Image 1 (cartoon, rainbow, N blue to C red):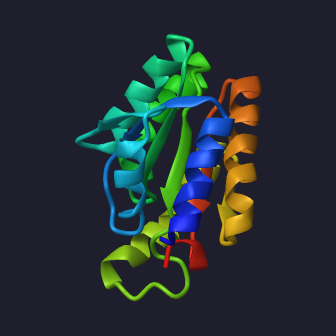
Image 2 (image 1 turned 180 degrees about the vertical axis):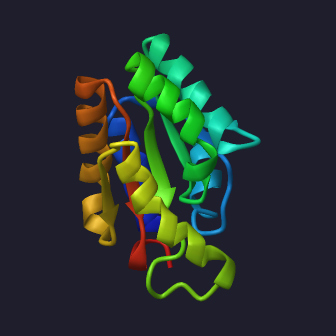
Length: 166
């Protein structure tokens, strides 16, 4: 991930009022995590799985603050149960920023299932999302996801793919 894309993500998070980021590191976002850790305006929480991160983000929402769940798209499958309970059952939104593993151009066999399952899982949970492959669209996509989620009291997602993460 280029430094300019990392900076666009952080600008988007700050524009949306995010003060806490939960993440489980992945290789496509490897440049993003140290930048988030170093930012004095963002508290980072490393999680052991994405379901835990979703639950923490939901708790942050209940405290009146804004959080982001940053993960590889494979983590969406691990987070399904807490996302379904919080979103469908309680109106507690979680905004997810995902790296898009497994899209066309992927060269790792183990990542292909992540691309095959991400969009059907998001659709099954009725979670609106954008796939962003152009750096200049990152900041706006993140801000839009927060505007929508905090108006709808439901989850949304932004998946960064293509040249943005390669």
